[in-house]
Length: 386
Image (cartoon, rainbow, N blue to C red):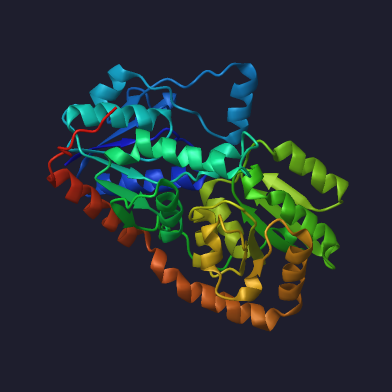
């Protein structure tokens, strides 16, 4: 079949959505399908199978902010969109941003069946506007993306039941849901990796993800400042984002050893294996690929109890959960596991045993089955009012 995959955000694998997008694209190609990728990545211009649209120009201040977030946001071009869609059996839209929304409308008018992923919680948007604590703002986002994308879909991919429940509760509708984990690649696995020489006498705590308000890395920095083992701990925050300068200054102010760095893909897997524990402090997380990767590596994984985060469902022991945005409670949890190495070893074994649910090939096979099923069906015949 001919599948057009629409990626508002693509490029370096610095966030879970990009990793999931590339995994799906590569899997479908390996299965022999013709995959067309509609995206804003200028460096892919002219390469077979890629249809490249421009990047939004928001003006210097906003462009700088978007760059710090670590993404390039696509600007829809109807001509390019129609080229990518012509002759497609099905279109799969990764996120409900401007390119995805524009493509959904055009594909629907062309009679092409549509599937879409659900990779964006409302708070991922509203937190940047500092209105994420307003329920009406998050509700408005969910209603908007349903109206402009998900109502057109014959199938919706939710990485977790958790995010399906949130979306369907907000829009007050049952959707054509397929709950499928984004999965973890086979190269992500437990292995023996020595700590770098400069870290051998340190307790290494790793956290991976975009430096953003809703990811709450500042909670980890503040927690380590309160730990009885503060001087022995080295935090590694792997990622990039708009809060980078703030976190550097916070760590310096609190005299906490904290490395903020973008790691090449394989280096982060090594870091997962040599770190002593992994902390995922996010308040908002619809699945958390980075957290899943820690679980697959059999690493002690500490998560928040936020009602807006799916990662608490990965915890194999309640002692691995701390109260969201509570540095004192996180310090308590960290210190407990440092002081109980035998319990920690048993807990890590449980994490490793729980990892079988996230095999990438099995998850991608389910994704292919979903897309093929929709491609075989006729487009929605019911008239949808604009």
